Image: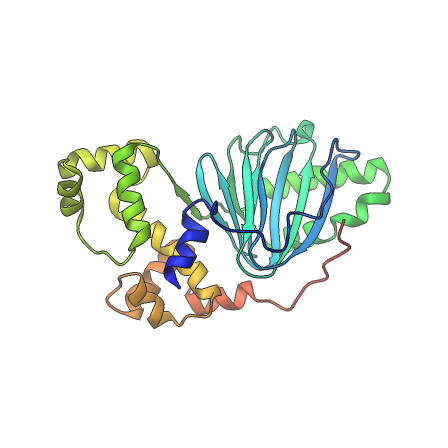
Length: 284
């Protein structure tokens, strides 16, 4: 089970086979409005192959969890979060379970105040409703579309930015380390042991990690485990099972880590990502 989830969520999702076919959505050649909504209900193991476009994108799932891979790393997007992807950034989107995918494409002339890099954003109730009702703009007047996108950008700017991103590195020694940690996230060896394994001092390894990923060893391993736990929770594993799988001494230790990272408990998180199904709008 863990190996399968690791392959999907941490090996850049490249080995996943889209058994249900690629996206049924027609590719856009241009944006006919300042904001274009495209909604699709994705089947398990679905994948949008790596692509980019000349406009910004807000990725959101009203139900299910999205995994997005960019040159900067891997991002996990549960329903109470969204992902902002600036124009011209290559990205691959996939899901493990059935997912209600809601995507907004924004004209670049409106997005100069949004981040220049890919970032996970919180989604409060107002922003959620704005996203879900975006298809109604298709026949709206230009002034209404303009007002909508300006308010949408304002809401995106004010959202929290949770750490649901695993930075990756192509540095050979760090790639070897990260591959090993992905293969066995329960390996609790300290940084000194990992440094010896790589032929480095602990100090050199720490400096290299911070330079390449922005995180020290403990932070990176904790982030990895937290992202893995989201997939395991979605698969229905208990908190105790997940704690043991990820190398924690007890369920309480895992819960404490989860709360530090996401500001909530695993149980509360599950309740949040499995709300009553919202109106999906038409698939376009």
